[in-house]
Image (cartoon, rainbow, N blue to C red; front, top):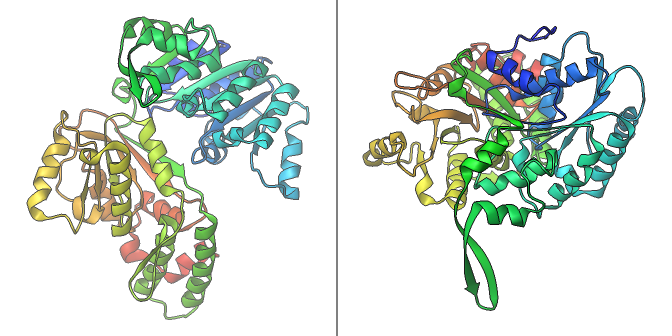
Length: 478
């Protein structure tokens, strides 16, 4: 494909572009880590160059939509394309109102509006999206489109109301079917109501689901017991979608790194600001040691993870968004997942949450409290691809050395150790001999906090455990 790309596409991305760039409606079913965001950015640029669109509305989950502003668009948008990006916020500040006015200015530049899917559950979010679509020739894309899989959810209904306002439509997800083939209906309906040849979700369900009648008291309902005619359904999908897995992408690097933004809750933000003031006061001393700088960093890091250690040793939980963002990620990936977390409090919370959601047999924790007699059994069950044990939740200091966990090709860092060796060793639990797939590493990061400082240094191969200086930390905090 002869085009002035800003970043060179991989072969599978070129294939996806070749199949989709001129289509009014298309689905990119590309596994996490294969670069579906770049495909969309390039497709938007191509349509803009041809005069087919002058705007794009990108809708994504709360932990993802700001990544488009900070990473995906600046990294991949071709240099010759002039564009403005406006990011949705429900706040009524003068600054945000000035940003919103940019959405309705007409000029030569491409206007890109980024919204989180949760905004479509509100009248304010729905109204501004509708006004934007009416004002422009727009491509509307739903990133992680399983967020509109429920036909009864208000956000799904509102997104579907807007579909006719968009000139082009795209859906993107690595796992279009999170629980059942029925998840596909509203995702595909957003693209075109006729793609699956059914006028309603219920006729679609009757075609592809096996059901039996059930009664509970005076209430009767149909219970889904299985699925049929999946070859027929897959044949329909092939007409308007591109599907690729990491294992199919021969030119992808063996390690793929991703970031998911986790905004601080108001309670976290208040505690973080107070702790940051305290840390800066402590770091003012000319004799600040590496150990004291690390102590300040750990206190700030605990707050971003969702808890606060008091002076008497107790742990006080803080309302936070991190566990919900982890659940969003797990909805998007198939197969087994390694989850690394630094703090005992977080490991216990993750394990309990996953046990409630996916079942007690789906998760095991591996940290200081795990009995030696149980550890080898946990590893063996996790490595057994037929086992129900899907989630390995571990402390990277305890489980990051010597273990083979190659049954997983997805690794989530709920929190990071500041020790470079621990990070590198924990990465290698999945990326070692007997691993047959590309491995994706996902860091949960609260932007503008100590999270960024830690990960930036780890990526730069700087070991904060031995090299952190009070002055460096102070500059970051200021």
